[in-house]
Image (cartoon, rainbow, N blue to C red):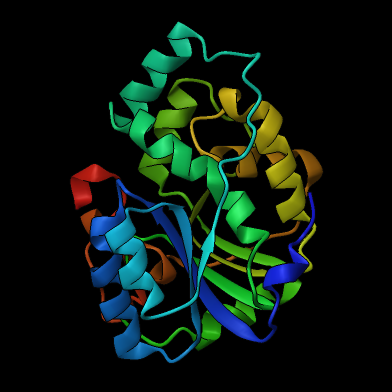
Length: 240
């Protein structure tokens, strides 16, 4: 898997992506980020409706993401399906197609330094420091501890494995982790609930260095916003 040269323009910029299931948050996302930032934005189309795509195209470039040819020879076991619904809820099946497109969206970034923000992230302040955080290759925050403990309860993490949240990611276009993430998604998607589960496992296996973001850049609604919070993340359907 390689970075797409056809989309490249350089510099710093922000990307997000959604399909028809999440496009109702597009305007809200764009309005909030525009209050505090003047960085260029690119939308990734994971399967938007025609009207949402037209709305997005009036405000920023839009890049189409073709659904990746995921390995279909290894079905998700019934026990795994039940466990994923326990962990995330029945909406997991509606969300997974977009999650599995995320690493391929990263490979199409037009920018040298990119900040990815999930469509359910509310930007509260300027994001200058987020771009600087990517200088080592990639920067993310850990998943919240209560979620990690649930994963450990079901033995989904190795004892010393760290679990990252991919709702906010700052990365360089030269980061070697991203192509590996996309490659493994094609073959191993059936083994992991979502994109961040697989990415965290690759980081663990390869001992890839990650700059750890403080939670002010990926603050959960349940934990409440603080005066220092930069990004509030309305994660899972319950927060929206």
